[in-house]
Amino acid sequence: MTKMLSEFTVGESGKIIKVFGEGRVRRRLLDMGVTPGASLILRKKAPLGDPVEITVRGYELTLRKSEAACVEVEVL
Image (cartoon, rainbow, N blue to C red; front, side, top):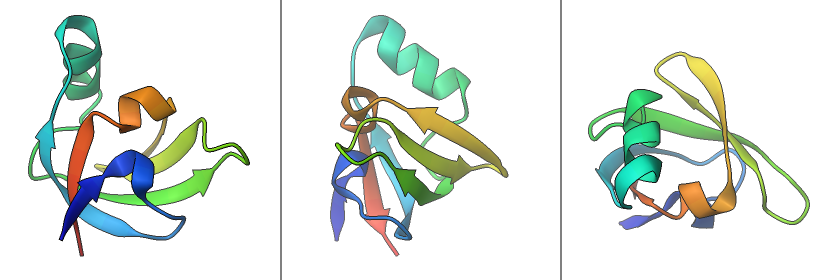
């Protein structure tokens, strides 16, 4: 089953399938290690859902909800 990272709940993990977006947003995500094939875990989510904190490639990364909506993940 796949869903967008912005739809994850705290503690869920998955494998990145595809990174959507255009220009700077997509390039920024890829540069930070959010690439297809990488495993991630959603660690924290702010009360209103923005921002979210994930662990990817061994480090913690905080993303805006709009950025998380650009990442398609296969739920493990």
